[in-house]
Image (cartoon, rainbow, N blue to C red; front, side, top):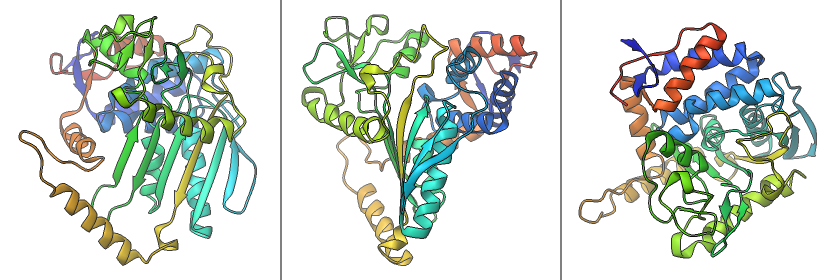
Length: 361
């Protein structure tokens, strides 16, 4: 085993988790923030969503030490009644806000059948699926959405408007991993552009545009992303609007067009992001046995549906859970930029960089 030195390699999940938590703590984050941010990043890296995995660690250190994100926030429930609540995140890390809000939504669902929490004064929270999954792991159907700074053009548009505005939903399945949908409403997430730059890879066709709104496959020329849907991009733009309303309008936070860019140059001013989570207890609508049987029947029918030649029919989450199984055994691949960032962070905070086997990225 050799230390990562800006070269691709694989690192075990436990080692990555320990390193991320140690770095965040050294950067001044309190225990709850370090735990939540690490949990969210490992969710991405474990399931193969590398654009929202541990490659975010360097950015999170920048915003925690720069002042954009409060490293020791005092989260509080600021209002609500019945099955709804509002969480003020005190400009803390978005992962802490997301997990805290979903825990409250699950608690409300346990009492009332459904729980909805609007989040305000938050920050980037990574993969929305992490919070939807937290609900499913507690026996609820979970939904999570947020907005982000403008980087996605409208359908037939030539300027940035919505953020990547993800929508995620997770559903518990008896004796199986949860059904898990986690999607950006853009053709790809912005972090995927950064990842492709690091890997020196061309973007897929039709997912990004240059300064004039023309398609480009060069990640260095990507000025904006296309909405999900290709020729039918109005559907992706409409879904982005739904996420915008639930996360920003409902929380009284900034619209995507008003949010400061994630990548700076200002890392000192809080961005004022909103988000929204929902938890539904299935037993409020149908008995447990009937719900579980219907989910089993649905998934068996879906997976048994015929595929075209060379294709495979999968349920949302199937690909990610299969990748998680591989990575639990083989470790997580690090792209060159992330490996180099880890080495810098280790030196900065006097820590040992995660070991990796070079050449297996």
